[in-house]
Amino acid sequence: MATPVRISATDGYALGARRFGDQSAGPYVVIAGATAVKQAYYARFAAWLSLQGCTVLTWDYRGIGDSRPAKLRGFDASLSDWGARDLEGVLRFAREDKGSRPLHVIGHSVGGQLIGLAESNAAIDRLITVSSQSGYWGHWRGVSAWKKAALWYGLMPAVGNVVGFIPGQLGIGEDLPKGVALEWARWCRHPQYLLGHGISRDGFARVRAPIRAISIDDDDYAPSQAVDWLHGLYSNADVERHHVEPRALSASAIGHFGFFRSAFQDSLWRLVTGFLIPRSSPMVSTGAVAAPVA
Picture 1: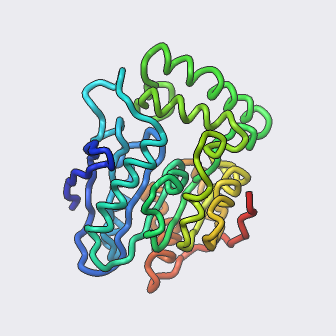
Picture 2 (picture 1 turned 180 degrees about the vertical axis):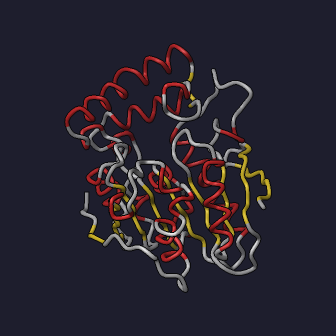
């Protein structure tokens, strides 16, 4: 059902990707995944979305999954590379591959942040973000805030510098390149997150596509205030906020990663088709609120 594809980042680095569906019509959808999450995690969702009439492209950032080198220790990669080189390369590929179809993007977690680093982001026709946020630890409260601070000030820099990469066994998902982890930690220590480290607001301001920004009530990786802060950067986009409470779906938990579980095919996934495919309408609505400007 999925066709393997090789995509060149803007610096020529080869990225592993898969194309689901090969529609002659309907939207072309790029999925930009979360940090340390392989594209395979989104395969069931991508396959389902292709059955709704979309062509879907999943891919791995450099250092992850099908884009991982033989050795991570000593591998040169940064979080900025993921946006400005990898995501940008994928968007350029998609613009050529899609023909005259609209180009939509679904950004999960960091995927919704890195949109602002991609030069071609003005070509996006619609954008959905799922649990995309500022990672600054001050957006958290109580014990969660102290845990995040310990991660960014202590554990992440220490392990990265000693081991040469961040092992996935620490609970982050896949192994993470050192440069990506250290830049991520630097961003998360600053109240202005990525803006505090040379990333301009201008990249986010280029995006004029309608945005549906989804946050999850039991998501400790992306509290609402952190999600709102990020989407305030999309100053020229019409941002429609949806905040999902698990109990409204009779679910015991959703969290940061649960949105893409097939258990939510008839509920949360309809928030995607209802926004990306005009003839569809969501089977569940959690209400929309205006996103405050950062």
